[in-house]
Image (cartoon, rainbow, N blue to C red):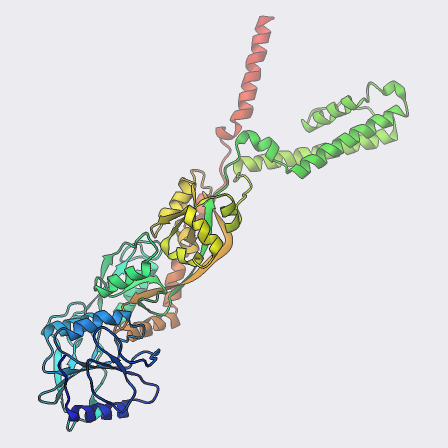
Length: 538
């Protein structure tokens, strides 16, 4: 390691920190074995030497650069929880190479000062000034001489280095094809909001498709994609490995299970009334017939045959079929009983026919037995969810044990929800907005839902745009997004894509077709055939 031991540089650095800093600021010194008048965190390229507890973000880095020192430090910086690329960097050495400048550019280091240890000259490196943002040529940076350590005023050391207008700059955005967030580069919540933000910054957008891993390590994937500069910005949730902009949307996720099976048509007669209604109706009818029988038995015995219990049942059934009953009342009590029979039977007949017609034209599913995640576990259903949702259940021993046996990894998007709807062999978690947007694809040929949503929410997430930590445009991007929020553009775009895809035309009442009357029609035709055969036989 090259050790620079010039007292004038140390005096100058002490002046800098006395000018800029107070006790709340923190400084890290890398490969520079000199003493300072302020507390520091000492680091070499691969480990921390001091025992000081620097939990806050570092504000300044002083580095003695030598062969590959810059590259080694930025590799090591991924292990530092308080690393801050937007801090001020002061490099001390004989020269700074294009390879080192490229490393700084890739890591979005914009506050760079270089002190020549031989001439004591101080240079300001403007890596992002007047060059395309997404493509950095090694010789494209601007190197401005600020002065010498002997006479430079420390206040002139750092100025605003982020340009107001980016010349010929293209901002690369990764996307995952998930409706309604992204349909294409012109349609979707994410592209429409990002396009307005880029127009405010006079920048173009280049779109790059990305595919998220099935496994649950999404944070490392986002960090890798952004660190390798495959794109500058991505659509995601809150994550710790990347830098998140302010939220532009909120999502609530629910459990979805296959909808209950459709009631078979032959069961309609039984399913018309609940068990309680059937019991009350039958019990009341039996009671009326028994009272009819008792009334006759204890008054005029000559009417026993006419007013037997069997005869009472037969007449009630004829009334139900809207046929003329054979009832004659000789007593006042019998007249009252006949009125009660007719009223009860006609009323139940009306209810029966109305409900039967509703079943023919309406939605006919069995009662659901799954109304919570506990019911899912009781049914031993396989869980198919994207890896992002898996971490919700990590700290619950009961859920985690169940997931170890019944978990099926699914990619992001509609794969899981489609399998739940059509294969009906898994339960899944889906964001309600995504379900509503794709609901028209999750119905059968009669436009009946193939999925049942369990009403208890699983989690509410904020939707963010994410960039690499230390990205120089974070403040400007947040400012523009906040501006769009304040003026209602974000709300308007979001509400535009919250319309239920299951439009009114899909919910129109169906007409009575041959399918609905084929059973009674079949009985009628069969009866005609039998009667014709009997007639011609005789």
